[in-house]
Image 1 (tube, rainbow, N blue to C red):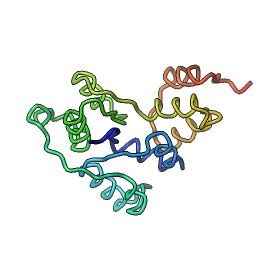
Image 2: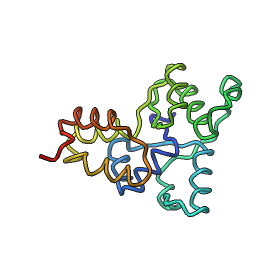
Image 3: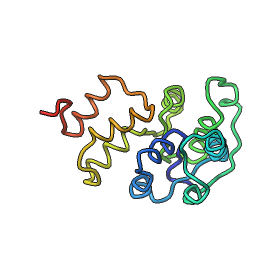
Image 4: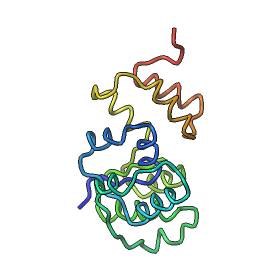
Length: 165
């Protein structure tokens, strides 16, 4: 039974900012569905900076049947659909998920979730990170979408201020 199930984007961004090990410090056993493993492999084929097979070996790859209720949701990608399916099959597990549509469905299904920002906040609050501002800058440089309000709220929750003065 998985305790933590990750979607593609969380793995991608933590890898790209050099903090994949931090995920495993916070969550020692992370599972991914086959669709997420396939998305990561496909992205690598297209030149996206993603973990190689050795790094992916740290994740437990699980097969899952997607229930009919999720198959009819066309707005979900295959990775998100399988992640939510694993969560439904394993009540109480935590899902690592950034996708807004996926989070909306997780919320409606009663699935516990957090995303990249929540994980970074947890790491800061646990003393594993000294500051978040430069990490958020790095994330945004990698294409992570972060509006000004969310950035300011994240920094405030972490005890930091947006201005550097």
